[in-house]
Image (cartoon, rainbow, N blue to C red):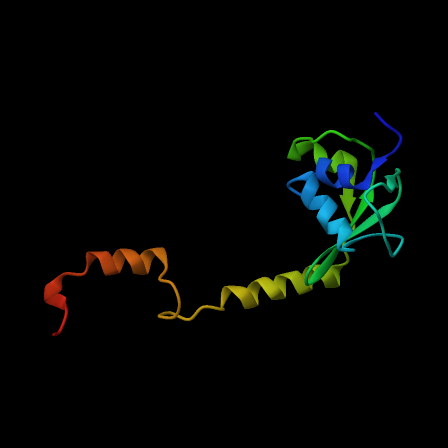
Length: 129
């Protein structure tokens, strides 16, 4: 294993981002912070530092436990990083999820799968002309 690796490669390897280019884009937009400061793709990650990644509306924090430049299976990720996101950020995420789940009122926008099936199963006799 290496003793340091580029931050974009590390974030991709520990499965924070689906692709390395998505990690690089987040870094370019200033969403990845080390020691409270935005970083560049070429910044080297070392064991023991904390990486903050902004996923609006929250900021998740990860502590580096080990270094790897190769993408790994999800079961191996806890050996390489530890999530140290604060409780208030996790509560904010839950509140946001609850608010979004109640967003669409019935009859507005695109029909749900169940509503679509019900529409398809309607017979012409049910309609009033």
